[in-house]
Image 1 (spheres, rainbow, N blue to C red):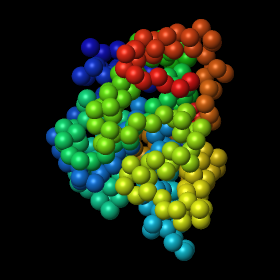
Image 2: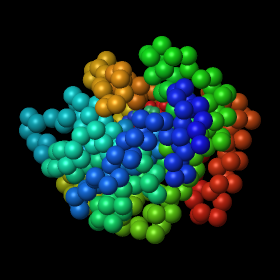
Image 3: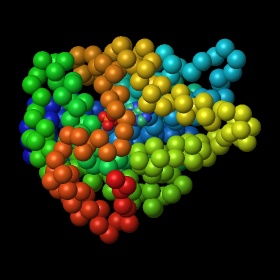
Image 4: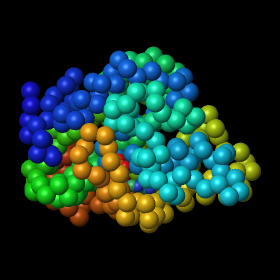
Length: 305
Ligand code: A3P
């Protein structure tokens, strides 16, 4: 089945999830071609739930030992998605083994049930981030509207896009099934999958960055914690710092398969919890809360709002 999607393309339903053709092609092309290293770590998420932040943090954590003296982090000159390849974009377009193997970090939006089997069966790790559905939707709408305007396409009205989202139709949606797939897997394989929320990360970033490092097998030493190393990473990856870097303010990048360049600034909008209330009516908010509550019922997962 197919449906007109948020970007004006038809969305196709594949193995229970909706994709526009470009995303679907990427997922299909990595299915049998991608073999992870056993040490690989994946940042997994649904779009607009904090992928860029988590990508920056994991990259900074993993590469911190290389930063000494005059060496500065690539995060200061490249946008986070140019530091870490996306499984179904960059790696789908080229030989999947054609990447910097010295930095065993990748990102993906692919739902758990649709990941290449090689990822599930190998000992690589996955860090999943999710977010309140209302904030994720508002973030997605603004992101797509900005992209569409730069392509001279009239954005879908917010109300129409909301209707689609509530029916599960968005790239990699239904949102709740994406979240539930990783949630259930994290309960089954806690040593393989770490499940995080944007809201908890915002509320206590230091505790979560320490947890991330521990999970990734490169815990902070007491010296790093007390000597400011941990705080340096938190500050460098904060919304305020990243969004004010020249590369993230004024540069653009290309994603294989997407014809027009994407402005890096579209990945940095507000970076707040609860901004949905400035854009959705209380009724819309209550409706999406209600849908999420029903869908997550019995799973043991309660997303913070
Ligand atoms: P808002 O649109 O609500 O501001 P993704 O990275 O998955 O595409 O998600 C984008 C969302 O994360 C946007 O949310 C963006 O502003 C926010 N974001 C980007 N960088 C961030 C950071 N360093 N810290 C917190 N939020 C960040």
